Amino acid sequence: MSGSIPGPDNIIRVELENGIVVLVYENYAAQSVVIAGAIQSGSLYESPAQSGLASITSGAVMRGTQHRDFEAIHTALEDIGADLDVGSGVHTTGFNGKALAEDLPVLIDILADVLRYPVFPAAQIERLRGEILTGLNYRQQDTRYRAQRAFREALYPEGHPYHYSSRGTLETVPTLTLEAMAEFHRRHYGPRGMLITIVGAVSAAQAVEIVRQRFGDWSNPEQPPIASLPDLAPVDEIRRVSVTVAGKTQSDLVLGVAGPPRRTDEYRAATLANSILGQFGLMGRIGEEVREKLGLAYYAYSSLEGGLGPGAWSVSAGVNPANVQKAVDAIVGELRRITTELVSDQDLDDNKSYFTGHLPLQLESNEGLAGSILNMELYQLGLDNLLRYTDEINALTKDDLLAAAQRYLTPEAHVVSVAGPNGG
Image 1 (tube, rainbow, N blue to C red):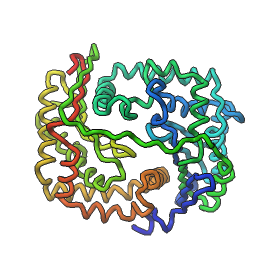
Image 2 (cartoon, one colour; image 1 turned 30 degrees about the vertical axis):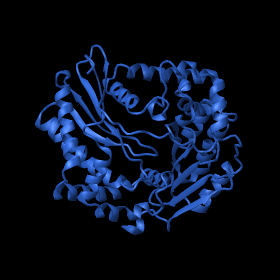
Image 3 (spheres, one colour; image 1 turned 180 degrees about the vertical axis):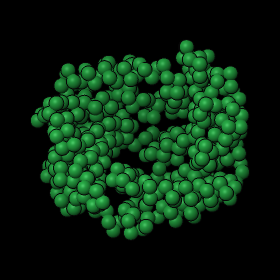
Image 4 (cartoon, rainbow, N blue to C red; image 1 turned 45 degrees about the vertical axis):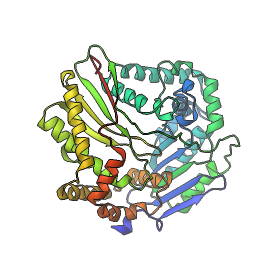
């Protein structure tokens, strides 16, 4: 299998003179090509008063450029059967596209056009703003969303970028002007820190040259250095917040802490511990105890975000409002168990087999390959990361999983948020 896994010997990595990093993996199994990439322009670079600015800007770039209006952009994509999406998160604005290999020059040309030359047409931007506000209004009645929002606002203090929704709020989105979007684009879109991964039936030399022709002359002297996150103090108490959403019959809860960033040494051990806690099979121990055995939840699982910063390690559940405290107690009991007891040999072996067996499936498609290669570069994991993966997973011990769980999960100090008909 190692011969077909992307690594330093078959991933071509080229850094252009302006700092753009291009990674190409040739795959002639299908006559298509996939691109995936990122630029350094997420909500990390906006002020709380302009929450949602990075997100609406990323949506706006596809609405019209100096060379193509909205219809021309999408007609050009439809004419070749291609897809292209641009969207923003906290740290980066990402883009993804797919086309026939022969149409890669057209796809990259459109990508360069929307990233470099957007014009923010008023009518299109107002339509986009309306779509965002409709989504935000809808989410105000979604107890699952409200519980997640309250959880993040309580876990991350005001001033920390993770405290805020990257999509903005009902209060901030209406205030975001066309001038603010154009200024954000002018300052934060540029080649510094830009990554583009290309996977498919195209030669690496050709792919690099196509990118060089469309992006090689891009410069932005005002583009700031890549931003860093402020320090985050660990939770040292139980913080409980509740949100009342009238007219609902279900409560949703989120309980957790800040977990390890993706590039930390203990991340792999934490992912296995999280799988045992609330993912594997019927959602791990959380699903077995809270949903199957006690019958307290309609759904219950744990998740570990990873990422460039301390994303959440949390448990989510949907419960009858009368059972909220019982569900919280059961979840805390499972956190205490995973942080005080070694997992069983069977749990460890089963999860190792799942993780190593899932890798080939992840790499079956060009999309999976492109995403994996992009992550290796974005998180600075090394281009041999996938080659090391199976050995590193198999080398993990029960003590490693316990140590990772103990470092982050704290049964006696965490955030609990509940959203439902009676708060929580």
